[in-house]
Length: 284
Length: 277
Image 1 (cartoon, rainbow over the protein chains, first blue to last red):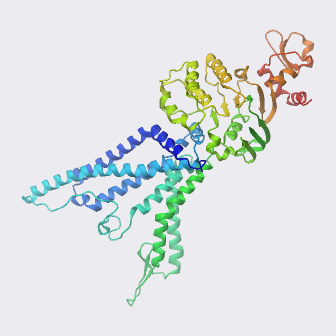
Image 2: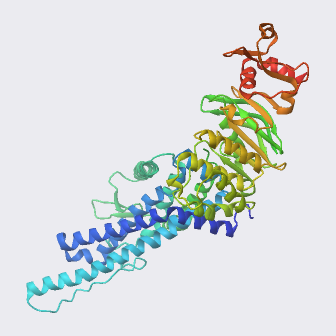
Image 3: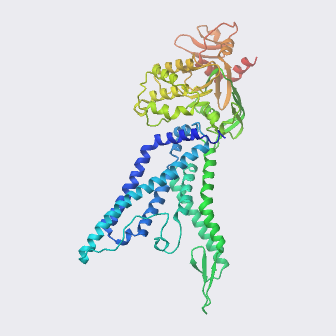
């Protein structure tokens, strides 16, 4: 077992990684904080639209930043493979591939998530405070009285109001379900591709998505009447009828739940396992 | 310690090894000699587990290097020709890297640095290339690993530095260790190695101890033109000729590594027949 996982060695590896990369991490999180503050300031002082500070507006910014920063940072997690000298140094470090993977996942997933969320909430808290003052002042100036009933509060990204959700109003989609598999794809891409991991992974994911769409249109729509329309993307299809007897073809409930279960709990670990094997077979 | 059998290795279409067989034993400092591009670094990288053979077996301490198990990695160290050191101080380098090597000896490391005249409180990026290489060599030797691989360790070092490296390596060596030093600057290894392995076009053309070489071959400056006729290899000098010949009298003589290398590459069959006799 000590050949695969030794907690003491893992701890040393994590400390070493932090020590060698701490400046880059601090700079990265500060950049995220600065970017978010800049964006919030732009919305506050230039756009000046009250709705942007609703739950849906905040959630949109949170998830947009989470996906962008998460995928970008994941692509740089294996900086140790940039060039032969660093690759040699990293591969010959006396720790197992599993320990090296755990170290990368610790920083890439846990520390990134905590760091990003912390930066977001700091920026969000400051923006909400400012929004409250600015919009109350605007309201008072326009309407001449003090009472302004709009509430400003920071969001809880784990418990969003589905009806307010900005991307798919009314649909209770948990964006974390998509985030972790996508971020893990970029981690795999970082170890799989020798150069330009971010771009290549992006192209690979878009290609997979395109193939999925083509398959959907070729297989699914060809088995349904020509006039079939999408009622709800990938789950429900409407077959209109001139006499009003429209028919709705839906995926069975269990298929929907199965896909959701796979997305939530299976894809990410499978991608980690793939990263592990890629790490093991990595050569100079 | 290291057993390589029927090793086949190629970079895409460029074949490097085609059925290589060689053993490296503990208690020796091997000089792996060969010109650029003959496969010295590729051999070291196969031994270290940084490259995987296409076919054949490489075993080090009975383990497969390509698996890169911690038990294997903590008992080998490679000083590559192109190396990476992070932007930290020497003290921090030790703090965060030495714990991975159970046999690391801090006193040894401090002594090596002192011999190299490198201040212990230096930041690595503030040091010159040669100084950083000396820090890496010191670290590698202080790990006290059983197998130390050094790829062109004297590249980029000044004359004093090269002699310091030889002195320190010789001082750090013991019978339980195996050190393989690859170099195309053969003069740098003189008086250090006790076994010579010459590689040419991916093949081992000579693998003998310095004792056996000194016993069977004579290296001398000859002023007698008749001697040139029976020399295995000769090259003109300012005065006379430097020759490699069969040591028929069994006289004790000093090996000239450069001449040995040239003689072996020029006449591999003759050299082999002398040692196989």
